[in-house]
Image (tube, rainbow, N blue to C red):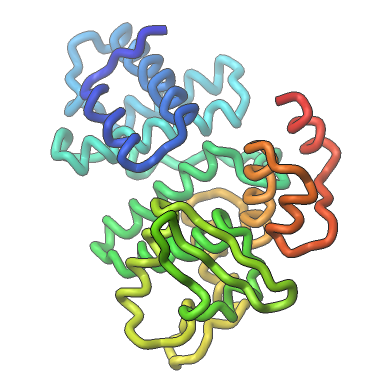
Length: 284
């Protein structure tokens, strides 16, 4: 399929700047091409800045009626929201027609062991969208730092609560996170994944704890859990710290690491995953 839709080249460059995975970008290109093909058939003279919420929901409802699985529907919603948010940021549209568009409930996704790439992307988009709406970069840096330690470093919630800035070191190749609670281990994040922690540190001043409460003490696991629950509700994606940690493990396995290597990264003796996830990994 030849991808073709308004501002395609600019949007692809934007996704590359956000360091989206190649498969994610390809999926977005395909979904947007299908949407604009549908739009062209029904509304051949409609310009991109004229597209409204009713047009987008009409498309989604038709896809549901046609029998598409809810996971596929949610991929379409994710792609549309990300694209029109980009157009809004760049001043190409006056009103984002997808601002109020929500992912549809999907029990299979809610009960899954880990987050899919589509869900991760939607979660990151939600965090950025919320910060833009509130014009609050501090919230964005903090929330992305939570994502960093759970999703990209595989920490437990107790480890995140006890993490000190002295245990986070910036080096040429990335960021080293040292965990001393329980099993002592170190994990190296690439620079692009560690930038959020770096920005967050610049805001926190001289506090010793990475995540500090309003009282100047370490943020409790319960408080961190509350933040994640809030993000879960806003995004419509069911997740918690352990599910992000599970996602970290599955991603490392998909990269070719052995079960023993991933267990070592997580600070556990043995990595156990559900049978359906094991079969999925075996087939890829």
